[in-house]
Image 1 (tube, rainbow over the protein chains, first blue to last red):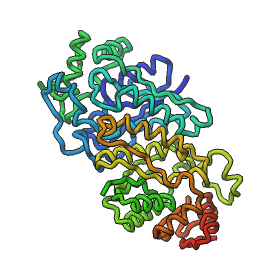
Image 2 (cartoon, helix red, strand yellow):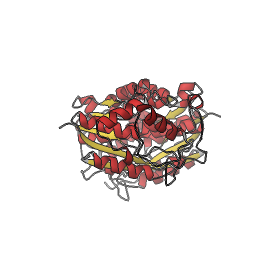
Image 3 (cartoon, chains in turn yellow, brown):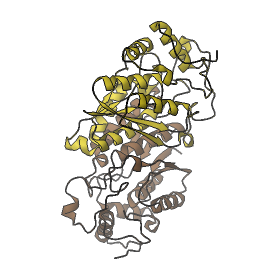
Image 4 (tube, each protein chain N blue to C red):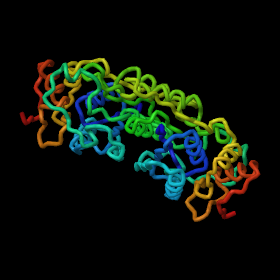
Length: 226
Length: 226
């Protein structure tokens, strides 16, 4: 069995990316980040998803992005709610965290090199929420090139690192259909940007998720407040 | 005054890189990492160096690379001592930390974007210790390209990020001469890989430093055990 590092946020996308990695025969080494995001709920979800996929290991790396700030997810900026699709599509949202995926992938690369994994899966998607610059193919390709120049394994040729983005060109509905095919238990996942007991149903992330389930003709097993 | 983020390890190289940034007229925003390295002494040095250069701010980001391991600096692998130059020049040393500079620069990029800095200084050097893959020009150029694709400021064109490596082609002696010209107080810096009261004088880092001072015809103000 080959090893794959899977970045696991606890959300719907990373759970699906992990299930795809598993369906390709990889042993899953999950990697999550406790980085000062608004709520720890998503880390509980990440742990549950990793367990459900028999992950061989699950590292949680802790650091405090609030020291840097600059985002509604890590600073005192309100998360927008009740936005329509056309509003979400305009510009880069305030939930953008400066260089977050660069940081996450850098840790993923370190972990992959240490355990001897060549593939790093990340559930980025440029269709439904294309505002984030670090969810686009151009970024991923540039990072992959950097990864192979940055590392002992890359330079010595004992590994060639691939940043795997199986969801990058799928709609949310396609992601959900794919996950359901693979048996992903979406009740374990968490997408809401807010920290409530139940998902708010109103932030961009909830709205995209709900629209995706609706379009996929499937039932979202999460409970929502509204 | 333009802002520059300067990665500051507490060592001789980053202190010199910071002094060069200051001599170019930048306001210094220092960034250090408490990442599970063998000793915290280098962080005290980083703080002292940042103060001596009137840094506008100094962030210390904490995370635990020992969870990932894979290096003599973060795992239970002995740091080599008493190696000759030709031994040091062979291959990538066990003190290599997987993807460390990718992680450090990713945080530097996040910090730079948040404060509106375009330049990120890092004291990497490929002459005297070329074993580290993430100290080479090829890596730095690839990271810089990635940085501009990864970020809101890069994509929107409000910033163009430059990874500045003023030491990359200098010998250790040339670095020391340059620093002395700029008034760097090398008594504040710390290079030793070991965690003793005084620098060991025997690890690769001490040996390179001592040879550099000797070649520069200068006195190293640090005290050594041997």
